[in-house]
Length: 202
Picture 1: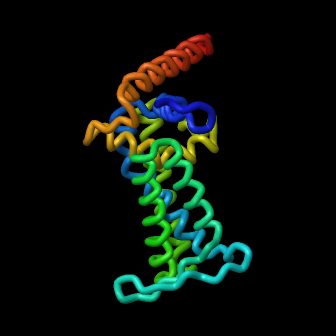
Picture 2: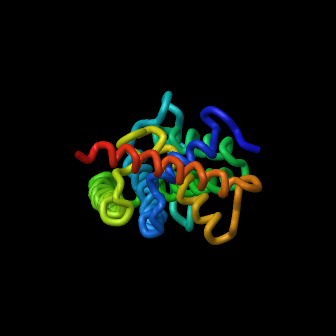
């Protein structure tokens, strides 16, 4: 069943999909979006714990890991809950990936230390963002969604590429007819954008 308002998956997916209709651009985003999430959590590992909460400590692969309840943790919870509310099945998988990224990034960051982590993050972020801008400029021939709606683009990007992969490789739909409905909305939005673009040409 379709949802409305903030949880309107059709609206969110159509908005993001209108900026990502080229197959090569979609593939580029599939490759680079989740690494952006992971490396963002890497550097956020070094933010202070919220409200003085003590770290959660345990062993992973024989190594000690301290999970900090900080900004990275808070963003992980927000993203995970938002995705589950959008669609329980795919959202649960996305939430699991968010948690895995948080735990994995905590493990890596604690091993590397801040002096090396920020360099790794900088290189990875530059590489991933450059790849996506190339995808838009060369293949999509349309500016990224974040230039029109920063919050929605950042929130939806990880879920969009996951849902796109689930649909492409497994034929998954949140509910029957979802893909057909959204595709029609995407084509409509692309048509409106092309009309506006034509009107701007002298």
